[in-house]
Image 1 (cartoon, protein in one colour):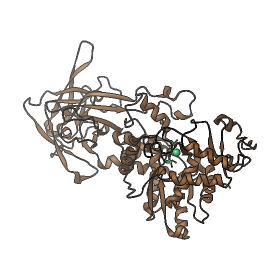
Image 2 (cartoon, rainbow, N blue to C red):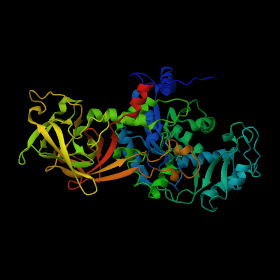
Image 3 (cartoon, protein in one colour):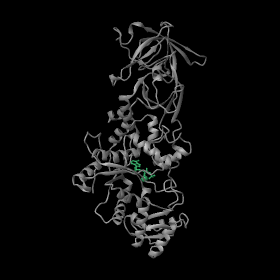
Image 4 (cartoon, helix red, strand yellow):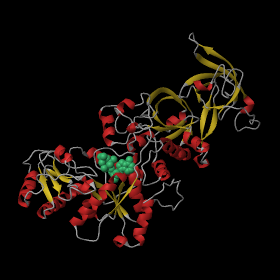
Length: 568
Ligand code: ATP
Ligand code: MG
């Protein structure tokens, strides 16, 4: 079948993606008695990342849209890699995104007894056998998509022997890897997943929920569809790599229950982000090897990392809605995610003044003992947010970059004999500088024009540049952590070699002694979002304390995506 790729624009309200269209059709046709039940099935072997958010928004979001329900089911079938730390973090992150499974919290391990009984039944029906070959031998017999596989020498083992061995596998008599249970289906099937798939393996690590009750654990393909079935899931939505698994999914459900009901698996494309790795194995490696500062390092694509960085649930949802759900793998631009974050924070972040790379500006004609309170808007996008006052004095901090002694033509910031406006205050004119012995500027001198105070009559004289500033005597020193891309190449997963060699060495820059206006410092609670005027969006880090405030740079103001879109 020929399918054409469609560019999914930001969908108009009421617009449905292709999965939702399928769901709607099923509901209209009265399938499953008009019931909709989806599930989100994370394996508790790592923290959720933004790719999972795409699946969560689909699973919970579509249920919400059509008045259905969504289960949270932990796919806890491999005790070697799983941990309650992951379970807790997964629940926290789903709630943070704004979704709720209510009383529908399930675990694949709840179904171990039924799955075991089902395996016994398949053995009794001659549809499963114990194979004592090594995994290498089994792999070597698989064949290729165009050549049939080879039967295992254990394929025709008598039923009684299979039953006996499988039970003894479960009682712990045999070593891990010494034997597996395989479904006896078809070693010549064109779908490789039908070539006698392994359905149970021996694992002796105790399970965090079931302890040492079981020594055999079901494989994904033997657990997933059946779990969906046990829960009455109607739509099992997953990512494209499961397309070839779908026939096997349906095969086992039909073997399990001779009924007309089978959950419907629908697949969509994964979220992949530029300059990012999304593999849980690699993310775990970054954490374990200390290449980042934990799962919630603000450079990580994990939901807890993005949260700490200052990204919001609504920005993530907006981004997922923009990239859409398709049947085609894609690499999504991180700039688009950042664009969504900017759009959201622009509406909500409180504006304050901070100087990250300060140099002192002295207004020589301003009285030494004078302070004026200047009114500053909290958010020009939302007048209801009101205003706050910021002190102005003879000595101010401004950005070092906002001054040039020998500026090029189009430099509209401060330089000798030139005028700029200090935001919300006066127009000043630079009269000179003081340098140290190395030629580094230590102080900049200027005179202000008292007639130009912002908001007063006659203050409307125009100058090209406006600078932000913070008054020296009341400035609060804070720490700011600046982030850049974690990887220095666009698609680290596509490169040869060790992905760790592709890390950007400058992805974290810690700046101490950033000057923040006092009102901002008084109002900085964990997780609060601010816009530092002219610089970007910043979020208060959990490490922050009243005596030592810490801000994460969430994202700068410059929107490369919007620029690209304009060019296009
Ligand atoms: P693993 O290799 O450990 O299975 P996984 O990323 O598939 O890793 P799961 O915990 O099994 O992790 O994922 C839960 C659900 O999230 C699955 O349905 C999976 O399809 C979906 N998911 C995982 N990664 C992405 C992604 N990048 N984009 C969209 N959905 C994803
Ligand atoms: Mg998975």
